[in-house]
Amino acid sequence: GAVVSQHPSWVICKSGTSVKIECRSLDFQATTMFWYRQFPKQSLMLMATSNEGSKATYEQGVEKDKFLINHASLTLSTLTVTSAHPEDSSFYICSAREPTGGPPEAFFGQGTRLTVV
Amino acid sequence: QKEVEQDPGPLSVPEGAIVSLNCTYSNSAFQYFMWYRQYSRKGPELLMYTYSSGNKEDGRFTAQVDKSSKYISLFIRDSQPSDSATYLCAMGGSYQLTFGKGTKLSVIP
Image (tube, rainbow over all chains, first blue to last red; front, top):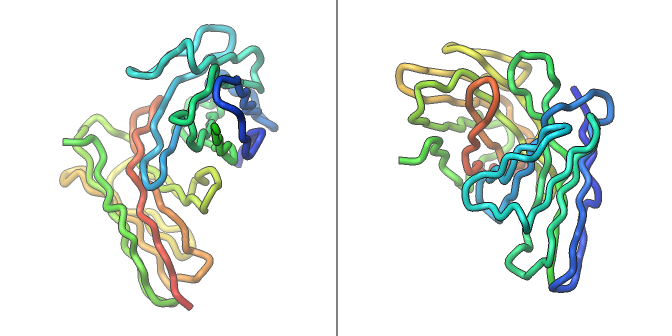
């Protein structure tokens, strides 16, 4: 299957600072990438859909000015958590799909555990 | 009613047991049905997907979809300790997936 690499795998930051998370498709071009957030014992919550070369589409209730998404190339999307607060602490996961037109086989990155102190 | 319902467990079984994991859904427009396995602090990995009603088998894993009942299942035969993980169902159309909460499975040696 396709490989999606996410970096960093964990990060601790101070409240008020910004954190950037990278998501790369290593062996395919991903026109669309997805960003999820996962709380303990909870489902994956879709935050936004990132489309290469255009603005991301955010889900209802997700602050686009706080969670900045950039998809500048066919292999890289970034999520920047701006002015992070402790309530932003969570597990963030990206996924990408091969543009084959077939089933939505989502390939996930390893996830990033963000802790804001 | 939530679009996808999945019992979070936890589910604990002895090694060698047959495991049955299930999800129900409400959106009849769903076409694809997937099962993912997620180890602690890792991203989910795709186990199996099906497109229509019926069974699909891959080694020790069997996925079942009953569209008339809006019910999907994942069976694991001869369960192993390495199967201990959280299993998430996901379903959707050709574009977006909706995930269940996941069922945490522990296979005890």
